[in-house]
Length: 260
Image 1 (spheres, rainbow, N blue to C red):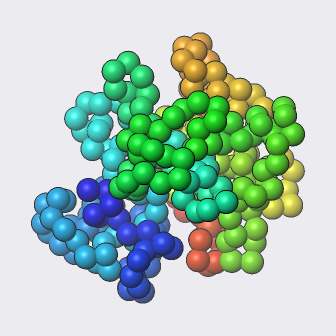
Image 2: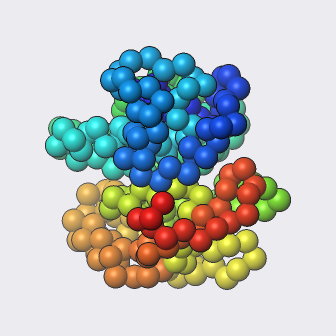
Image 3: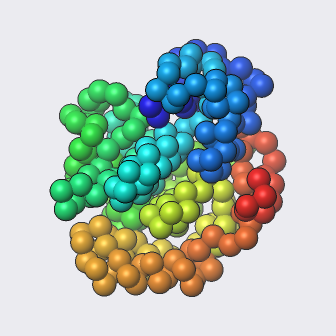
């Protein structure tokens, strides 16, 4: 269903119409569903031609899957990080889902219909240290503690490159926000997310990454501490507005949350 409703604005197999370009800035699931129903007005399971789908990305497909699971009282969350199975010899920024099933978090990719690369089962992706999906926390810790390169992790937005520690720290903060239900756009920026050329709070990043990694291993104290940090630390918690960039290179704009 997620693949039926959302057409990836960058990797669609057909040309998407310009009139729906702004779909990618639909921040909330309710807005995405409104756009879909305005165009179709049919059940979500009814086929949509790719050019008529809502333009979005992996975040939007995951957001829909997570929303459906929560509607059925299944705890679910989205994870922000990097996948090595989408393009050959590349680690691509990506969002996947996790659902609490049989007393464990099951990681799956709502945008993947069949096995690809090292992912043999898109509905149950490994969460080991060698997972084909690298969380932002694991990427940060691998670089800071073990010297692993993260120079290839990032994106280009217009003439600006977000790469390396600048990008990974932003995604680490983004992942924590998503973990606790604030599934912001991947091009939203707030708090201690560094912009290219600005200082990086390495100490905060180290502490945040360690909490995420411990919480992912099932440490309840780390999970509670991480939630407390997200709720009270303005470097991590999203406030009343964000700086929204554009993957299409448009100038960044300040957006008041709840009004868009």
